[in-house]
Length: 238
Image (cartoon, rainbow, N blue to C red):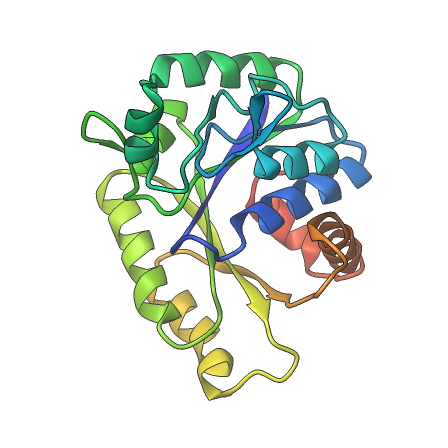
């Protein structure tokens, strides 16, 4: 069974998909068989009579695998919290079904990267949260945080909540660091690293690519040239 990581964020829109896809691309460059999964996607677009998860497509493109229903088992139409979007679509999100999809993907992979939706406290179904799904899959967390003012509070709260729920936090990646960081961006990594009880595993630069796939490729090749990347991958158990 593959080793795995669950990528969560301190909020929606912090760049979880970019981080997860970049790690998949980087591992694929090293020769690993990478499995990816986006268990629940809200705000899917319609195409040829069905719903498409662009996040799942990005992950699959980075990993070099086909995007199928195991990769993205729950695709929801409305851009709302998954519990609400599922209610509108008449769908019940079933953890056992997600676990079975994960196990099939993991059986054919060396490494699994699972991307959540929103943050840990996002409701999924019947009072169950995204954090409960992490526990169901028994995966350590990689927390993606933004770099600017407010990120210390959001990141520390996310890590604290995870630890209180018995989840393991492998580390934090601070994403989208501007080329000229201000005082808030310069000081945040130190405070996050000292307060979260988990290491800061990367300060990833902002890159304005032509599209998300180009940004992922750029970041993966940038990381591949960083001497500390090997240490980071070891911290993640890879």
